[in-house]
Amino acid sequence: MELEKEDIQGLMVRGHGNLTSAKFLLYNCTDPVGSCDFLKEITPLITHADEKPEDEAIQIAFTYEGLAFLNLETPVLNSFCREFKEGMSAEQRRSVLGDIGENDPGNWDWGLESVHFLLMVYAKDQEQLDKSLLRIKEQTDRCGIQLIHTLPTALLQHQKEHFGFRDDISRPVIRELLDKTPPETATTFPAGEFIMGYKNLYDEYAPAPFVPKTLDKKELLPLHPDYPERKDLGKNGSYLIFRQMRQNVHAFWNYMKEQTDEKAAAIKLASKMVGRWPDGSPLSLCPMQPDSALSESNDFGFWDDDQDGLKCPMGAHIRRTNPRDHLVTERSKIDSSEMAAKHQMLRKGRPYGKPVTPDLDPNDILDASGDEEERGLHFICMVTDIRRQFEFVQNNWVSFHKFGGLENDADPIIGNHYDTGQFKTNEFSEPNYPIRKKYKNLPNFTLIKGGAYFFFPGIKALQYIADHD
Ligand code: HEM
Image (cartoon, rainbow, N blue to C red):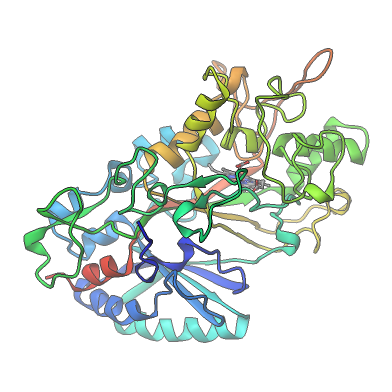
C-alpha cells in the first residue's frame, strides 16, 4: 500500500537535519474551545512528509490528558492503548521502564504533572526560530494556551552525542518509502511497524485509536479497513516516545579513566560499552581499532563469529537495544533476527546543551575539566505499539540484569544502575580471553529529566481533534 505522505507528519520520514535550530515546547490548555481554535490555525502549518521545508518545520503531538481535556468523546479516548492512557510516569509504567530511585518521576523536571501537547519547532537558523516562536506565542496567548516548559536543542558536530560517539547510524528503513528494491543488506520494515493504518510484521494493521462512525459527522476520517463501523483516527499517525536524558559526560569519562591506565584503553572500554568506536565503526567488524571506512556501517550481526561477545560484548548498548541475529534465548540466527525485528523503533532525537569540547573527540574530553553544564539527549522515537517495541526494549533488554546470560548488568550507557542488596544492575562484563573482565559500581551516566507518551496524529486526525463536535 502506498504511503499517504501528505497526511503523515514529516518527522516520520526525516529528522529535519537541515533545520539546525529547534525547540520543543510543552503546553497545557486552559480552555477547550480556545485550544481547538489554536489547533485549527496551526493545522495548515504542520509539516507533512511530502515536503522538505527549507525554513521552518512544525510538528505536533498530544498526551492522553491533552486529548481528554479537548473533550474527545469517551469511546474515542478508550480506543487508545493502555500504556498511552496511563502515561509514562504512571506507577505501572515506572516499574516496566525501570524509572525508580534516582530516575523516579518524582525527581523529573517535567512529565509528572500534566502536559497536554508538544510542539516541535525546527528552523534553518536562530533568527528564523525566534520569528517562528514569536508567531506561535501570539497564537497560543490569544487561545489561552500556557507554555509550561521549553526544551532547547543543539545539534553537535560530526553527528555525535555528548559522550563523543557518532549517533544515528543504525535506522530501520520503511519499505514503502523505497522507490526500488533495497540492497539485500538493508534492514527494511513494513510501514505498519511505525505508522498506523498500514500492515505490520504480523501482516495486520497496527492497533490504533478509532472514532465510532456516527461521531465523525464532518466525514474527516477514512474508514477502518477491517471494521466498517469505525473511522480510523490512527491512520498515518504513530505514538511518539519522548525521554529527556541528562548525560553526565564527566562521570562517564572519569569512570573509564579510573578503570584503565591510559587514554587508548579508556576509549576502548567506553567503545565496548557502546558497541561502536567513537567514529561509529562497529566493534563487530573492527574489534581492535576504529576503521573510519566503516563509520557508517550497519551490515553486521553477532551470530556467525561473535556469539561469546569477544568483539562486541553482550551487554553493549547497541547489542542490547538491537541484538540482531543473536539472542541467546533463540535457537537460530533466523529466529533471532525475526524476534529482534519485532522490537524496532524509529529514532528521531536531538541533543541539547553545550558540548564539553566542540568536536567531541574523546581524547580531548578526557582532558577537559568538570563543569555543571546541563547537557543530554532528547530521546525521541516513533512506534505503533508502545508495549511491544519501546517498553519491551527498555524492560527486557536495557534494564534486565540477566540479559543474554549476564548477571548484574543493565545497559552500561543508559541503564539505571543500582544495588538493592538483593540484586544489582551496576556491573559491566567484558568477555575476554582467558577470563572475562568485570567492571563494578557503575554510576548512572544518564538520568531521566522528564518524559511522556504522545499521540503523533496524521493531518486528518489532527483536523478531527481540532474540529470534532
Ligand atoms: C543519552 C541517551 C543515549 C545515548 C547517549 C545513546 C547513544 C547511542 C549510540 C552512540 C548509538 C550507536 C549509533 C547507532 O547505531 O545509530 C546508539 C544506538 C542505538 N540506541 Fe541509543 N543512546 C541513548 C538512548 C537510547 C534509548 C533510551 C534507547 C531505547 C530504549 C536507545 C536505543 C538505541 C538503538 C535501538 C540503537 C541502534 C542499535 C542498532 O541497531 O545497532 N538509545 N545509541
